[in-house]
Image: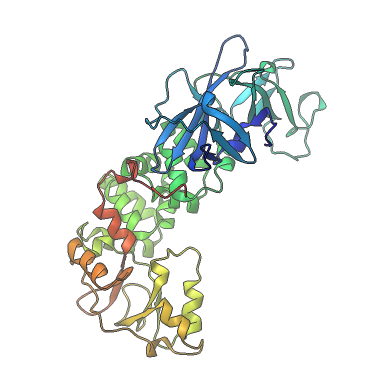
Length: 429
């Protein structure tokens, strides 16, 4: 999108940074607003939805956009920070138009919308939609079978807006493929923000199209109401699979929000050891070490080496807090373990030869917490000793799990923090 470009395909704008004239970042484009018109007339583009640093979504009038170039949007610098509220006459391109099934006027053939483009009107700062990029048939691109008239199913083409019909303000025949592709590189917390702002129907479509691991990561970042709504629209077998893919403490928190009979059905569908972890976590009071902890920290036996520990720490699925230390216990080495012996911190692992036994590197000075330790005491412990995670043991000295600093923060912030302007204040840096 060079400086002289007058046409922009709108999926390319997703996530693009917005700058003021001084080069300071205002935020990122999250969607484009259009106003559909009757009679096949091209929709007008009144503005963009921009997510600013505080995670607030604001309306940026298209007349305030002075340039769309080199993967960035330049504004006049005059931005109203009032929260964006979608009006009934407005349609979101990325959230509501992509993947819509429409019809080619000339042939009556049904096609899928992959993208639309906007063009700047001559001698004006207004933009309108002019082209639609579509795919024929219901098959994927490249499939060998042919549709009506011998045309290859999956063939793509670009047509004038007036060459298609079937766009409307409802969500008829709209899938989620293009939306998912558009936001494929988003972090789970950012994708959660996208889902939160979609309509319930669209949110369910996107959730259904995500794989279990991706959906699990996103659910952990959503407000409780959204979690319950999305899980409730999944088939029970899949809901159980997604719960298994979530961090145990987050899954247990979500289960407690569900009716007891639904809890039991989902637990019965889970793997027995996963269900056992869930039941154990749900037995603790919410604002205690037991209610906060995860049951899946890194546990090693005393005869494990530094090399073994580092191999476990390298697991990309671990959070930074869980990867910061390993817990050395006697067998069995799944929680609840044998006797807890001590902790080895990541920095210590880096200072010793790979063949060194972890049992010789133990930090056993700090007493682990008991599961009934209240949240204020957990917080004080982490702050006093500058820890990012702390082990939790039972009366017999077996490791039950670990509480991480992010779990503590979740419970210290207001209950609706995920929906406030403070959520992810550094998300656009």
